[in-house]
Image (cartoon, rainbow, N blue to C red; front, side, top):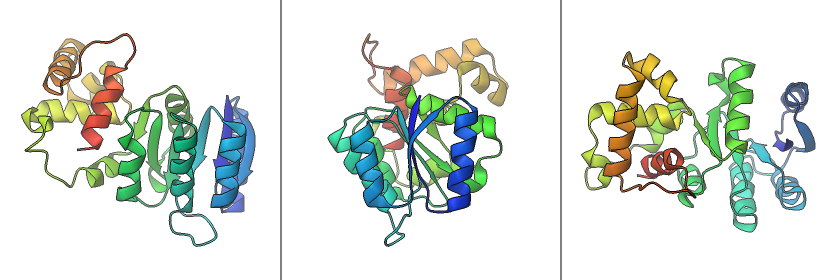
Length: 214
């Protein structure tokens, strides 16, 4: 699996390179600024990009802007943001095209390497991997006038855990319910959000994107 990595701190960048290589990833580029990131993404078309938000030259949002521009040029390019900050506007834009293959983790809340590596693989596979704190900040706007307003509290809890990338078994364990109950909740969620069965679309991803883009 080919990876483009963007991180301005040399020690952290080298550490991420070593970590990913140890888990079988191929690092095709490891850069420290926005312009080089955009070029690396477009030139290499990697299986996944791991991107910090704030990169040189201005240390504002160059990483996320480069990732957004790359996804415009290479639709569906998988991007996992790894940052200390939640940039709500650009995070929403990253989710807005509805194609999935996105993630947003906060550096100080990644508690073990297996969690991080699994998130990279999940995003590369077209799924989502969202930190709960990111989800909370993206959900500041009321959903009462959208289909999300029809969801019960339990259904919203299930959907939030789906957004974190949890399986039905993991959700059942977290909520102390059966997998059958989780399956019924997910079916209800899909119906209320108008997400019909399809051979082409991943309904879990579409539901999560609808939730986060509310």
